[in-house]
Length: 242
Image (cartoon, rainbow, N blue to C red):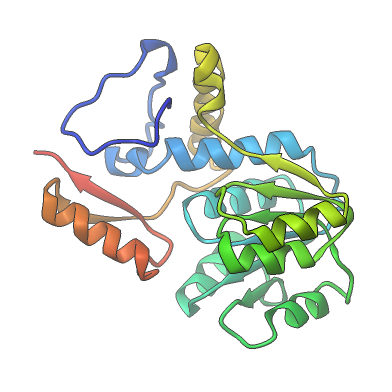
């Protein structure tokens, strides 16, 4: 968990961070869990969300967003608005427990106005940005004064940073790698164990995934192409080493 990952047939990790996968899922499903689920759980743990808080999540059907929505729904957090870009993504969120009036397509015109209207014309207490760039600017505009902005991508813009500063926002930077700086391996083990237990007991469902093919230069390029053009349909992309 100390880097941004690698493409390799084998990697070594400290024994202290390893946990057994949930018995009820496949190794392919298990491979799609650690990074995304740890990020989502860190967001949930550090926010200490009140049921009264209104929350905007951009990119809600990506790897992190999917886990986060599942965790929030499992903990009875209801005041969630989520953005999607495809009809398939809407169906995924409905299956996770959100309602149609909690989902807004970011490709529609007047995204800002549509999100405000969906939130009773009120700014949000919490904004969780899983997209960045231009969406970060809209997200910052929709946050209330002294609200909390959760930055997961480190891809916000000068304009969004200015908006957040002017609003006196609290900015929560999310990084899976922070604890590796002090070799706090227990953090990873404990949270992976918690995630495994939630999946095993049915609190949350395992991630959906798509096998791109055997590990090769071609499949790596194909996976990056699918990510670039938003063609994953909410799936984690898995390459198989045989």
